[in-house]
Length: 261
Picture (cartoon, rainbow, N blue to C red):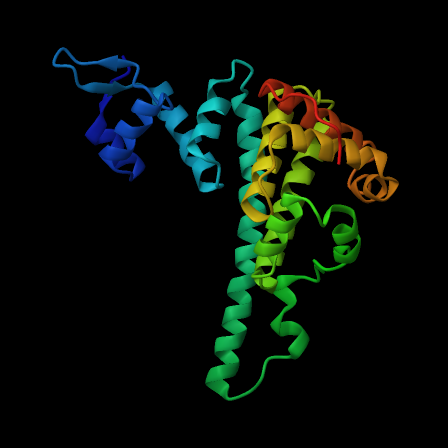
């Protein structure tokens, strides 16, 4: 018979605090399956599996409220979630590995009194140019609050910030492209969860993006051929898939229709 674990045992096992487990319970994020006769929380194997998902999503930067909603969705699929998490973590690991090698090269050069090759110094950061469409964006959206907020934030970003922004965006788009390749519906929980992750990504790095605005962004991906061509390089039809996933996610959150700016 499966033995239930107490909150202190789970805290030691997962290397998190008892307070965190209590907080997850209060949020309805992770409620223990049972209680002892004395009223103490008891966690089952299924509870531990759910906790693992909470910690995976948390490590990837998902807010607790979004994690609660994702795990509470009746269409949530553990296998799909694990595959998505593995891809996101693999991409992060590759980035960190490149940065470790860059640091090692810099230390080695410092100790030997030599210089790292100028191009090699920044190889780990890639060649992403955030200013490529800056002037056009200013003309098109310069008077909007979203543009002003984005301009305030991005003015402080360094090359490593832009490298991280590009990598996070690439991972999300690739995960969506993989769903498209697998024949997954754009209205599936997996696609909507990734659409929500993309919306949160915009909010973290650029501007607050309500669901209705995010749906409008998806429409623009299809309406503007330059966006369509660039996005569809990852997989033909991806721009349409993004539009539909963004729209489905907005509808799931009860967003009202708004015109695309």
